[in-house]
Length: 238
Ligand code: SF4
Image (cartoon, rainbow, N blue to C red; front, side, top):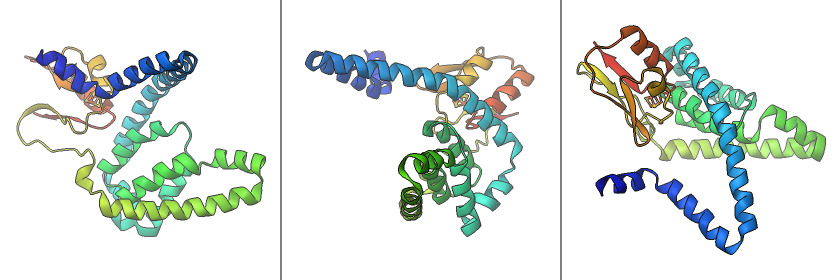
């Protein structure tokens, strides 16, 4: 019984979606089938894109030092940080959900909440390829005016968000002082990469990774797994 309750709690949103489709199937079967087809399309797209995003995020995390992120995107970066955040979001490619693990990594390395909002918002609405298409279909004047007002709105929303949302409200890396292997459950996004890389040690417990009972650890494989975690949720203190 407890297992069933735990399963329902962990998958509440999914269950609600399935029930929604079920209800719609009774009222309007055609619309429900169209909805299922659309969901299938997006799930396939995510399955193709997300592994690449996780690997790229992990590589950037390894290559770019924390000091660099703090200097250029941190709270002290001021106008320089705002400009860089706009640039990063505008030149990006791919769907907006691909930006989330990337932004988690940037925030954990010192990027400010204001700059995270700017990256996400410009990724969603002022991407350069999108602007070119907009100018082609709706005209240059429309595109420029919309761009100016959108950028002003993004700056205002970013400022307000920074006032309301604190750094502690976002998933953060908790440094654990005791020895051993740990997973920061707040940070883990349940991508299952670790369970595929090192299945003898990592498993999924609902939507989060957890650690199996282990005797010996293959140090090389463990460090590779730690490096591949896109949000650096795995910590190992020898
Ligand atoms: S701990 Fe495992 S499941 Fe969680 S984010 Fe890292 S690699 Fe993905």
